[in-house]
Image (cartoon, rainbow, N blue to C red; front, side, top):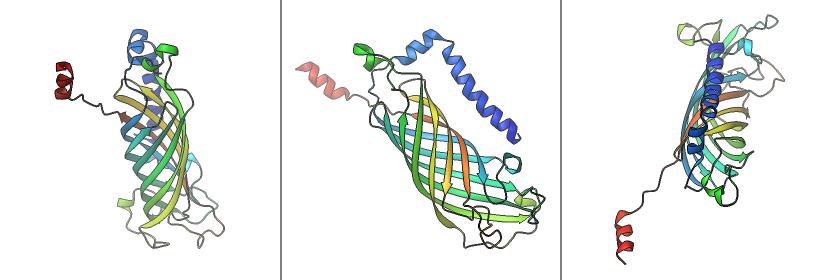
Length: 256
């Protein structure tokens, strides 16, 4: 699957999830009903694609969309504010396609990212009012998020195009790898709530980093260049564990 097909499939899945649920009014009404407060712990797992902006690639034409996978946890403080902690594995890659530059280089980079973020819901998670507020929740909640963290990465560059595995030559590392850097992710997403336990959230996030070596090309080769950044499109599956009532304590209360 090429990069255009991957993006189209990602967008199509989001649209289908929304339109299919919105077209079923009775099902949507049942999905809104809830007896669980909008707070507490949520566990997450996700997958998506990444794109990089570096010294040799700043446009979609030279990017090679690479996979992203991750796990994490979210804590809802109330219907508006949440905080999350994520561990993501990101693969980056691109090929120099600027004819004015003699580098003729490609690179592949593996990134392990640990970030903490604050989430703000643009709509209240509850859709009801008065006595119905605690039992009705929105099917779709848009949100924005911003955070900070660290990246642990290894970059490899090589001449020409094609896969790294097919290249018989690699360039010397511009610095010692693995290396550490600071990352600031920000963006937003949509949370689709299917039940008290299950939600799905597609996100678009841009990551500003403190590193100039994600492409293994630093200021020695291109003086005065900017830091390297990357974007991520990811779909996270969110699961809210349910608290089981203690059957023995319940029987004890009934016996009193």
